[in-house]
Image (cartoon, rainbow, N blue to C red; front, top):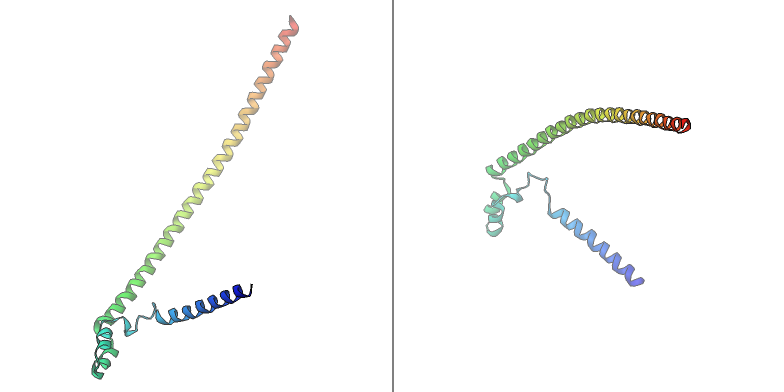
Length: 137
């Protein structure tokens, strides 16, 4: 039991530490970081100080790439709004059709009850006629 507790505690500790390391390593929403450019790979491999200074400045393609990413995100947001509006339209149409369906279903059930009542009346009248005929003979 004591070993199980130690194993569980150590797994929790390792999981928390690895989560912190992974969170520090990956920053998907930080688009202004220069770590996404190819110049940092070149700067990391060179040993001169001037190339390291050049790598610190983002290249022109990086800033346009960030603008393209932001515009793509805004386009996706707009598309999501359009799809949500379309969903609302479909839901309203569905509710209208559902209301019609329920009214028709209620009408059908009342008509079915009336038909059964009429059939019962006819059956009772037939039975009464048969009884009268039997009593006449």
